[in-house]
Structures are given as C-alpha cells and as structure tokens.
Image (cartoon, rainbow, N blue to C red):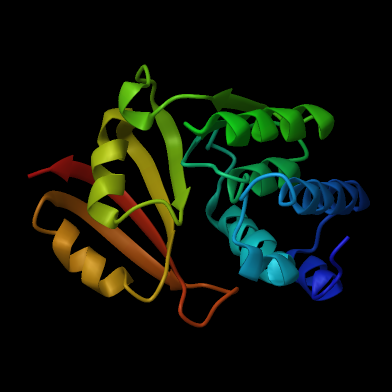
Length: 207
C-alpha cells in the first residue's frame, strides 16, 4: 500500500482506528484497481493520500447532523463520497453515488460492500436519474460549474447545499455561472492544494 504522506493526512483529519483501517483498505483497493482500469490518473497515485483522500475528507467539515442525504455526481473512484461515507461512523447519512461507467460503478459497489458503508450506487447518467431531494450535493473533477449547477437544480430543496471541489479556474467558472443562475456562494481555501477551492452554494435557482 502507498504510504507517502499517510500519517500526516491521518493526523490532519483526526479519525478513529476503525476509520483508519477502512481508509487503508480503500486506498489499497484503489491501488489494485488502477492496474485493471483507469480509476484515477496514474500521475496522482503516488500522492493519493493528499491528492485524493485529504482533498475529499475536508468536505466533512461542512457537513452537519441535519444532512441525511448526500448526492455525489460522477463518483469515479469514490472521491469524495466513499471517503465521506467512511468518516460517517454513525451511519446517519446515506450517500448516493452516481457513475455511468460500468466498471467504475461495479468498483464502487464492491468497495461499499466490503467496507460496510451506507451507500447507494446509481449506475446511470445524471440526466436520466429519477429525481429525489438531497441535503448536500457534491462533485469533484467532473465538469464546469455551469454544468454542475444544471445537473443539481432538479435535486435541490430550499436548504440544499452544493459543495464542489474546484481548481485554479474557479473564479473564471464562477463568472460564467452567474450569467445563468442565482445563488449564494461561500468559498474556502482547500487544505490539500494551494490552487484548490471548496465552493459552497445555497439557494440555487435558474435565471
């Protein structure tokens, strides 16, 4: 298993031994799966603990006890949704992971089962999904903000929060999305990358 920066990341997110065991297992599963399919970029694999685990885990800070339904678009290898599900030890939240690629969705199902996580895997395209209301919607490295907003609005109730992990193009994307949607937005610096931003949106409606 890849160990680079593991201890530093675990000290930052301050989790139980049970969580550590599951995170270790998850990282090993991703590492093994990378030999079979392009589950994450090969260039990021050596730094998986910072680039993927820590980047995902930081969203836990913004979740509350009232957040019961978490919807993750384009889940891929399970970042951030599976990491957040691992950290939710009380299993008070249900994580809905949306992934249209067959092999990736099968991987997500296998990990969720092996780690006993409270997850529902949706093997379908976002546009084709039946609508349900989510308390929080997440996405990471999936699409531009305007596309993420368009995907999200159907699943929003009046208190839904959108939490997107974005890179250095975030300010530019924000200007574009302001032309199409009304919303409140708070941004926070990423703890995993100097170029990253956590973007939190509320009260999203089309113009």
